[in-house]
Length: 79
Image (cartoon, rainbow, N blue to C red; front, side, top):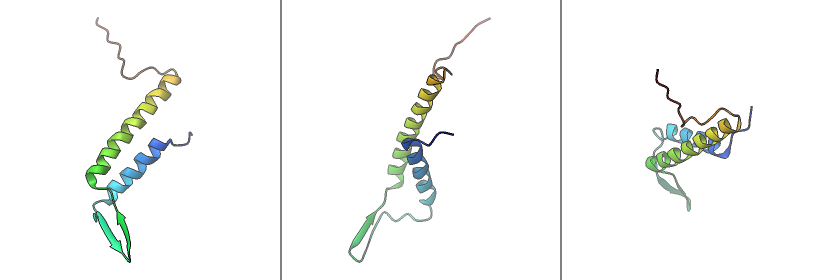
């Protein structure tokens, strides 16, 4: 099996973060002079849409290279 692409890895991580958002939804905090800022739910959704599109485009390119054709092109017939 092929190694996951960067887009696939990022999509997996973003979806994992979205699943954890319900548990811990603090956007920004500071402890002992060090601060941490997290992505908001809407930012994560935007990133998820972006990487889903990239993963889909990679899959289409892989299918085309394998000779499976373009899934966007449909051949319609009438009898």
